[in-house]
Image: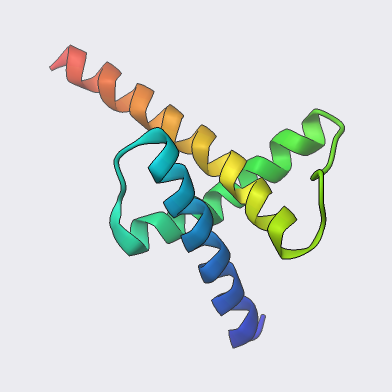
Length: 89
């Protein structure tokens, strides 16, 4: 995996993570948004494959869309886990 690929994943992760944070609320900073976006790309890909569908469009915008969907799901799950932990304490 080359440096260009890593940088591309970071940019996609940053954009998707930032957009998801803007929609769901509460961000994790630049590094956190990159991580959320990259992990979200895997989650989004898994969800769309499980549903038997693909992205509605291709290329970089389609990749960002898939990562965004997964990042939103990830942030919602993290929010649920955090609120469940807060209630126990």
